[in-house]
Image (cartoon, rainbow, N blue to C red):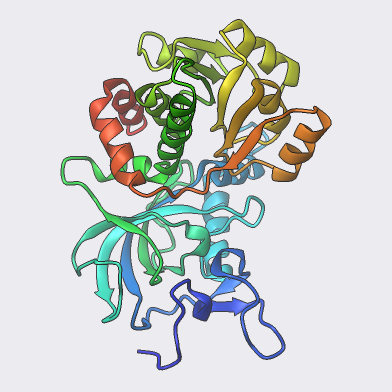
Length: 361
């Protein structure tokens, strides 16, 4: 076990960039390279990796980068790039999107001063990003075809003293639990924001619009908004196929097909469905939705950005240029109790569970 001091936020694992005196200049998420050695400091936990789950924005970027001339994704090229990223950076952090994902695995070793409350042998999901988690892959990702966000893998990861992990529930397929926990911050924050609106104006149940309503974070956000007291829910999807997934589910009062990157197209579609929205939730994994989301939101409303494809400069400057009085929130992925809340929504909302389970096929 190393004898040098550790930091609960992982500063001791930062290898680059370093200052003139050798001190780390960033936290692990912004670091260029992490120390991914298996040996633990006394407040750390090592996880034997079972599955990595790449976040949607990161996987989309990799898949689009490695398109073949006939439009297919070159899975071998995606796999090779992921392996190179992990080997080079000591973590899985897409250098273009800056994002990572999460993982599930089994607790292999617990440092004597770890505050996480984990025990050797427990199967867990990490609730912190792979973009800040020391990671080593030892099997060359030989079981992954590079064509999906879920990556069967052998290797190990390290959690710091201030990391977060949840024991996997015994009643759910681990792949299903992984998908839920990957996005569990979204429904928890949506519930909080909608609850604030309801408490502030009991006579006005808010209208909530979710961009990407048929996706993982989107469907859970719709369910959370409904439970928290939304008066009307609007789901925006890009194609009729996704609209069909939501029709008849009662997750949304209105389902509209619109391009979330089109300022006028989106705002008109939302207005026609009962908007503008008091709360707009951005759950899509493509860039360019910042100003359209602002335009679809009522003055004094709130826009919650959960997409790692978001340009926050474009959001802030776009709102200023539109003279839009909207509150903009960054969904940072953590709200106390977020995993339990999301799992409860999944268990209690058949339509959400069906959408998630359809992704396992």
